[in-house]
Each structure stands twice: as C-alpha cells, then as structure tokens.
Length: 295
Image 1 (cartoon, rainbow, N blue to C red):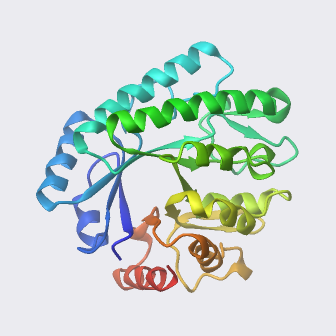
Image 2 (tube, one colour):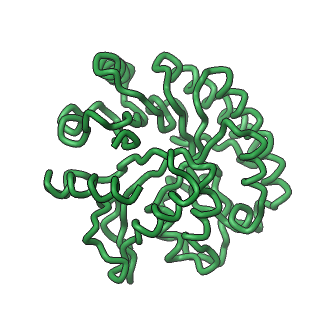
C-alpha cells in the first residue's frame, strides 16, 4: 500500500489520520488549510512521523477572491492575479519540501454547450466558458504559456506540478494538444479523478471515460479515488470505492478504470478522496485491500 494517500482538508484531522492512515502508506495530500497555525500543525506532524506531503491548491485558504486560479481567463487582470496567486502559494509550499503541488486544469473550464452541466460543481459563472466563447486556438496559446510557466515553477521550487483534469471538452479529448504538452514539459504530470470522469461519462455523449483514462494513463502521477451514483439523479458523491457497488446501479466501474490505467502505468499514487466516515472501519480496510489487489 506504499502508493496510497489520504487527504487532509481545512484543518489537520488527527482522528481521521489515526483511523484512515496506515504505516505503509505513501503520504498525505494537504488542501486549503484555514490558518497559518493549521499549516504549522501539519508541518510538525509530518516531520515527526516522516510522512511525505503533496499539496492540492491552494495551500492556505482565503488568499484570493476565488479558490482556484483562473490562469486561462479572458480577463487580463484576473489572469495576471491568478499567476501571482499561484506563485505565492508555491512559495508557501516550499517549506514542506512537497512531492507535488496540484492545480485544476483547465481553469476556467471550457464546456460543450450541448451538455447539461447542472450537476457539475462550479463556485460561480467565472469558473467556465462555453466553446463559443473561447476558441481552440486561444486555448492552445494560453495553455502553452501556462505549461511553460508551470514547468519552470516546478523546477525552481523543486516540486512536481500535477494538473487535475476538471471537466473536459473536445479541445482535450479529441485532440493531441494536451498529450504533446505533457511530452514537451515532462516534469508536469496528471491527476485523473475517477468520480469526475464517471460523472462526465454519464452526462456527456461525446466523452468516453475508459478511452480517456487509457490515453492519459502514461502521464498520470495521481488518481483521486471516490465513487458517485449516477442514474436519474446524481447522489452519494465522494462515497468510498467499495467492491460491492455495482455499475448496473449507476456507480463507477472502478475496477475497469484502475485496470485500464494500470495497463500503461504501475507507479501512480492513489489518493482516497472519499468520505470515510460513511463506512465502518472493516469496510474501509476492505476498500484498501480491494484497491491494492487491483493496482
């Protein structure tokens, strides 16, 4: 299980750490701590227990008007503020000597206007554009600037930049642009989020989840693992990935996804981004055992 991770969000949860973490896990992912004091608690704990750390952007809450930087924004001021925001947070993370710092990509998201995105979580309208508002050529130009800058930031601060793919459109799944960028800037890796991929697979007729993870598996460093039930409604978000959850009832086919990724990559880490309190300790251990067998 030395490729497994758990998340710590807002504040360091000692009870969660004791219940969910195992001595042979790889480490923890830290996301948007509420205060500098909370960050110090994290730092003391991971140093005392020799635990590896990755950061999910932002490192510290409430440093900008949005949680996620909007480096692809059509608003030049917002774009510039986003780059400054990222630079400050990367510098803040440096004291932890993190394995990685993860940001969402693309941001804002570019959406196919023919798909019903009402079940996708957006903080507000600034987080996305429709394709008619944001051309492919502009997406390529701005993404290229971002990749070059992000690669340099990773080298400067000594961390691996990871991009967690948010909702994606044809600019990503029907072109080779992203793949070529990952080849050119090889220190940048991907995070595949199983819950997001399953949800988009259910709502977007042009998106094939298994084909998508197969295409990007070679560039993947991290998998965010959780399940969600999609039938007439979307329910049970961030539910643990249990072997008993059937795809015939609307749950993600976790086994198929992980086996497909593992065909191309046997070193990626798995972050259990689930609500572990929803299940018993025995079910949690069964979850770990099942995923260990799959990968």
